[in-house]
Amino acid sequence: MSICPKNKSSKARRDSRRANWKISAPNLVKSRKSGALVMPHMLCKSCGSYNKREIVKVED
Image 1 (cartoon, rainbow, N blue to C red):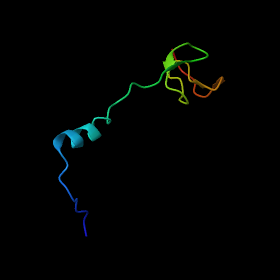
Image 2 (image 1 turned 90 degrees about the vertical axis):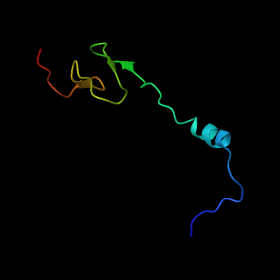
Image 3 (image 1 turned 45 degrees about the vertical axis):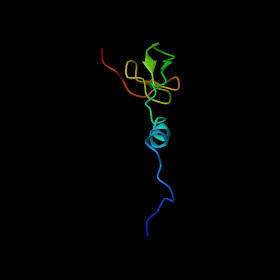
Image 4 (image 1 turned 180 degrees about the vertical axis):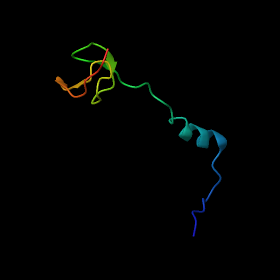
């Protein structure tokens, strides 16, 4: 069985409910080593460090 609404939902009510589905800008923080903008809890691509430790060696 499927859901059967008792009354018809108007277009304004339906669209206002869907209006909250929006894309937000990604949160960026500065890398502690290189100062480049990086997403939090991610490896820095410019210097290869995470949490003050060098994880990947980056060639210049």
